[in-house]
Image (cartoon, rainbow, N blue to C red; front, side, top):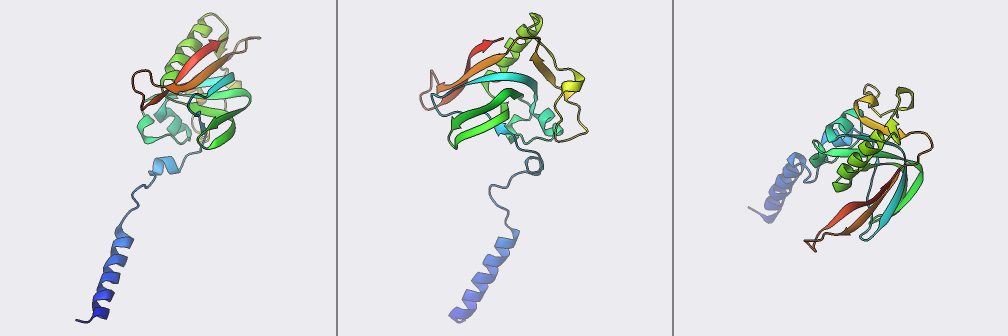
Length: 182
């Protein structure tokens, strides 16, 4: 066989592989069809103070059902959607980002949930009323299925989240809520 025939066989085989092979980092369909929201992130040693207009808590699957994109490892984790009083600017690996709605995961979510429930008991926060609920991308989902809270009266809930080095593992970092005031 001549070199030209071998070259044609190799090219044909490579073309066959290219049409069958799937990309290594293919995004699953459930993430491709949802609406994107800003994911809260800060540079290391960064800090952000957020003044809360409304805050919604639910597990990842609820957010997916409501029409938002959620990472694959967050289906069963508690997530919080924060709607701030005014636009926020946070600095992260992508530079400065401006947002009014963001999703928060990790440790601060549990702390926020506990503090919001305490504020609910002390009447500083209240459940979001039906007429004030946000409209999710999937209009068939009712946001009343989430734990949605808002300020009660003149109270102005705010929290501070800090991105810091992990205390026991220097190769990792963590987000921590350093202040909640209502």
